[in-house]
Image (cartoon, rainbow, N blue to C red; front, side, top):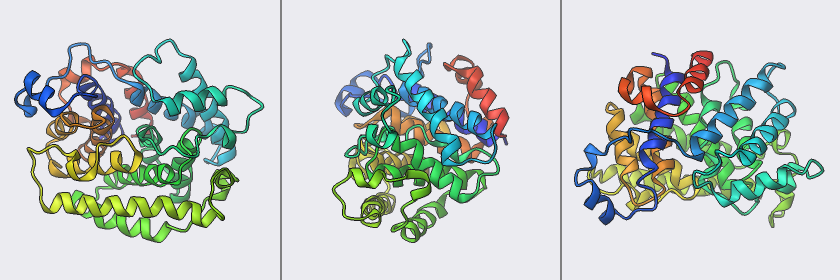
Length: 332
């Protein structure tokens, strides 16, 4: 089914589909596109920083894994290098988030520890918009998936909710590649969050927690998991009263922060688990962070359906197509 290829193409297509609708109200969207189910992909299907940074994570993973099994020691420096190269790139002109920009600027100073560069108070969706590759690499242990997901977030977004939401996002992608039924996801994710809510991954994060106001590593990370559990409650509420034509952000949130980006994107996928194009259109046609929501919804849908999920003419014109296909082939 080529699930890795499907997920990578899906996240880029969702990103490009949502780029023109970001920052627009539902009223403005309705004036331009009265029927959300007909939302078009631009002829020049340009992506945003979401896909750019996903590729940064993918490259860092490839570099780290060339040296052996994934560890914090092998992964940290390639991540730092890729993030700084993204920050310096002339193509970094796609409305990137302030947290990513400011943290990457700090990371560019070699004498600064990454824990000090991290924005400990930020749980923006930049933490998990780029994490999908951790759920796609074959052969990772659950500890490597979890630790790597948190680490890639932590270099820029150090808030515990950003870390937990990133882990849940990558886990969702992985579960879908394992042929998990979409309807089973909310309960599985809730059980996982509850089981891990007090686990601080010191071997991956080091002393990051000491940059916060929390009195212990456990209390630090528990805050993040508890906020993710709360948004899973809202996801259950939205699914129980499912309205496929309503703004998906009304209950699970607009997605500017990591746990809401995860929940609202997952909602869009779960509303249309067998119709991937409709799922990313629903996410893109929303009042929130539409490109990030559609990016994550596309990763979920593509991991579930595989490469055949996406229209061939869309795939042909997506920016970074060749590199996305290269990583897809590597991990499929």
